[in-house]
Length: 240
Image (cartoon, rainbow, N blue to C red; front, side, top):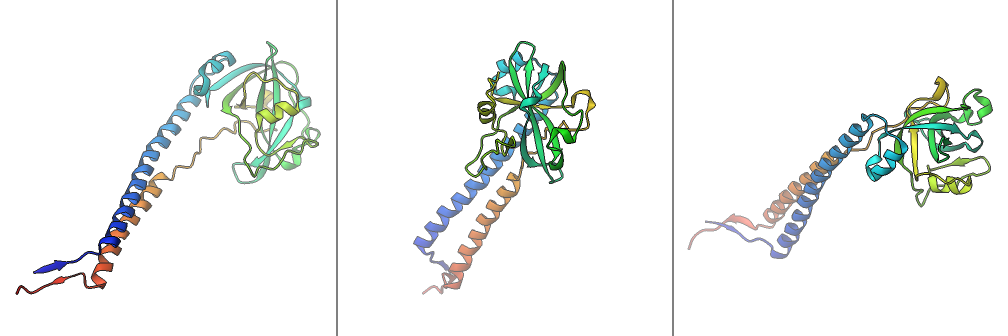
């Protein structure tokens, strides 16, 4: 008759590891559904009609990716530049300018991107709108500088994160909300900065991760069987 003599300690270790690997795979499947729902919500929000600043403020966290309509005047004296990578991978500056609303509140507007060579406004004449402006943009939560984010070069007004709190402190601004409005289009159709930079491009590799964990669990089962077979733990015995 057949006989099987598993190694208890090794088998218990493999069983625990198998449960962990399967759990990680299931967790990645749950993350996949969450990420898909989040991306769908972002796209739905961006498709909504523009709301006023007060309406956006009343939405709280739900204002993320909602279009907002604002009227006011840009304070071009306080224009700052955030170093980043453009859609094609080239280095660019995001141009952030305070917009002083008709009711005297202030919001920070990301007017779009310019190449590094066009950071200085004098190199792009007419790029700084003057007078009354009506702008529609996407409401975005401000960035938080990371541990490795370089310190801003305040003498050149260059930042390495859209650190709204830091920018407001340096420029002595009192903002209506710690958020950024990403302009959907440039006022007066100026060539620079190029607006409309909002992207819903969250990485969504959770399915690949889940498959990897499940394959590792399957490989572990194969290793467990192969280990026992190599040591003669599988086989057949003759009845006495």
